[in-house]
Image 1 (cartoon, rainbow over the protein chains, first blue to last red):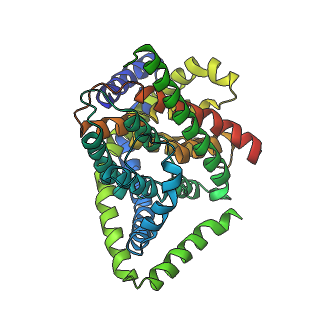
Image 2 (image 1 turned 90 degrees about the horizontal axis):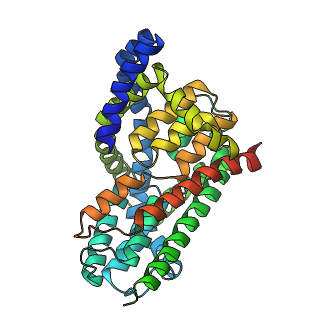
Image 3 (image 1 turned 90 degrees about the vertical axis):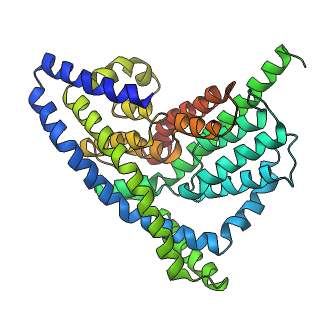
Length: 197
Length: 170
């Protein structure tokens, strides 16, 4: 998908640029955007390392495990008919905690582990299980508690209060996640009613 | 109040780290080193997509796309500047970052559109990438309503980003 978008955007910008007479700006953009990309990368590098370092301390201090225990009672209502002492549920709890803390590097391997374990425990075959969908929705809806990237870019562009967006982010994330989970549960019920086992 | 969140959070991690006798400095350096690798991994995509978005924007294409979708988004009170961000967010993380940077060079981060864009970046994820990677490791090929439900969450996120900024910050 990103393949086509990338190619189409570049081709269209040449065509539009010629049609609108903006070719001069398009040429500037072609030469300068890559420099801006490296500039942005360097700007974000510091923050990424700082949070990566702090989160490693949190991980080693057992904060991730502690929080994971805390979320178990909440998560067991989302995943039905899943062994709560199994490896799949454990990996799910760890993955959610890593996501909450903004530990992208740790969350993805844990998420892959959870998917693999779900497959082993539920034997869904070629069609996804209900619990897999629930887990996917939990991961595609962002549940990060502190929006560090957004905050660093806001500072870069001179925001007076880079963290003022926090209440909006938390409220929006929670509602988006709820909407995703409710729609997943509803669509699951509808498809079950259509095809009774 | 919001200025307290990050410093207190950092302090808390350090205190717990010390109580649990973690080699705090060594682990910090280790984690930071891993992040350098992760950052370098997104650099090529960032260069490619910032070039594409930069050229597309300079050609007037981005404005045209936004005008096309604007009747719907105007009805929802969603700022036009954020339309490209909503379109690319589910598809590419580096792309979204590139668009976010472009938006903030145009409008102030403390303007309505700047705030909405910030909330979108903070509260949504790269849906299609996550689905591809997570299902990719299993034998599952029929994902049923996984995409529909994830996009429901994204769409709710976009609408509420605009709504919450209007309610809480304006």
